[in-house]
Length: 358
Image (cartoon, rainbow, N blue to C red):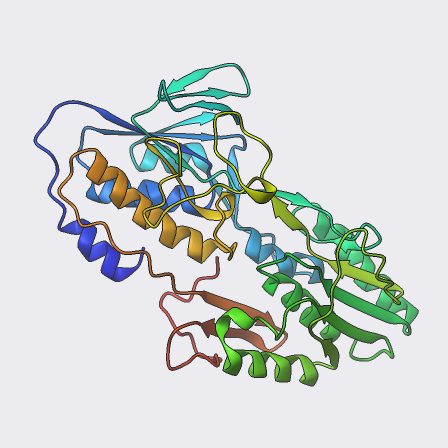
């Protein structure tokens, strides 16, 4: 949690009540784990926290980008053990339906779970945009990407193209993959290009950061082209021997849940879901434009404080003022980026501590 938010929550006064208040957290990703910590730190002992997630483990996906290049597998967290350590219960099942009027959810195994507050952090589903490309989303895609790069090295010549399609708000992983692939191909004549629909490279970090990223790409021997449109069915022709892209995110329909374009959930500044009483949402499932773990964790801190206020805890709900942080993994080590500071352009030294990547 952010240090300022931690201080705010540490000053909270638990309510003088023996009545249990149940918070049901649907999802076991970065936001879900952060919410558990925030709720347990500032909430009263009587607060009941239940976690609902379809997988037994959480994998830190941003670190999976090194796997295709011989790096360690992304670390995992055993959700049942994490919940037990922090006084929460864990149910391994998926969310099937929400009944806000009854304050209950239906799981995909037919069980019903009641709640006083429901926090949705179920993430989003990956959707391939360019069927002719290898769409990297971590996990099982690592082996396929590794094979593609090995084939390019063995060929010694040709063209490898990395493509950021339209409607991709967080393309940083593709930059990391391109930089690592270019390093592997440095002793070949394979031409590496990076074509993106962004106006400038990683533009949410600001113009100075974009210029530095552009320099990093150029020094790696990557031809960068911005402002190009690539969408499914657009007919845009890609001239390359190998093409790598990343998927678009969308949220499947969940009965009882208000949803907007591509299924994303509308929320207000306190992460409350518009049109669903006592339901909050954070992370990729929301209509927040940046889909990134650090942003999701900041949203989770706001939601946790607002949920505790709903439960009767005297706590100040922090204003949502997201700070975008990222560690761009390059062949020469991480390059740290952060929005809204004097170091907008990024630097090799960590801009935050601990210098974790999420």
